[in-house]
Image (cartoon, rainbow, N blue to C red; front, side, top):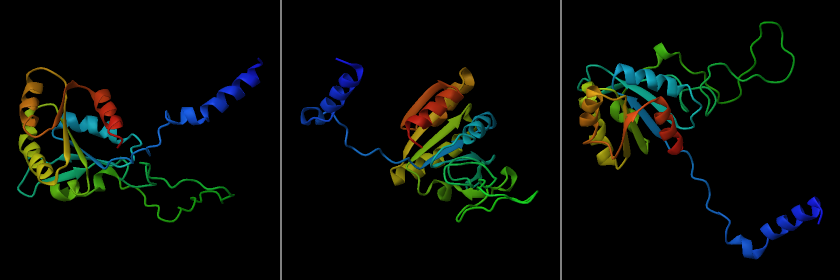
Length: 206
């Protein structure tokens, strides 16, 4: 039997009724609306790196210190909804075909909005930042953000939003972070690093 004939036979078998029961007809789940919140400075550095990735529906924040009664978060530039084209974090409009005069910028397509520079992204109240999300991931390296974790946990508990805590690093400071996050996180990832946080967000389809 020639290679072409063998490939044709395999294709025909794959299309047969007997093989149809092995097909997966369930549609792929859409990306989840995630909020990633860093509770301290070292966690914020990781969040900034993660925000540079091309996420679909993830937004990244850091918590104000001290966390006042208004409970405001600072939005990080990047992520899937930070600006620019949907799913992109860039601040330049995509180029279009056709000649342009020297120094002329390409026209932005309809609905395109440039991303704001990091220092101009406004703070937002905690409840506003979390509204519309279905998963919240909290990053911490120590226990300084315990009050923020508590506020996030209470909000997510009332709304039925899944929460995950990522403890970055190890040692006694990480133990403090575990103590701060454990009461409020349904899932807790210990002794993690940036790559672990990236894999978690990827698995969550954000």
